[in-house]
Length: 38
Image 1 (spheres, rainbow, N blue to C red):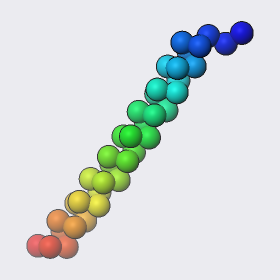
Image 2: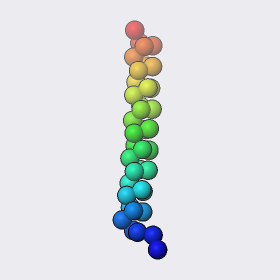
Image 3: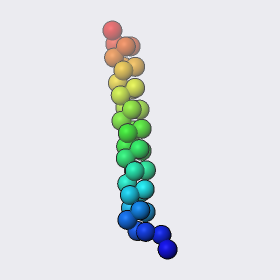
Image 4: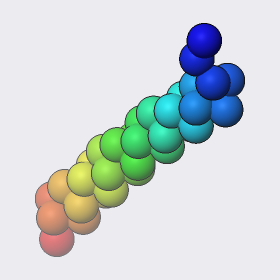
């Protein structure tokens, strides 16, 4: 049997990693736009 708490923890970590990747992507887009507008 798998521990449901372990499952929830892993799912939460995957979600957090996806949010971090999304934030990094948005920051990169903002940086590119900032460079282009100078």
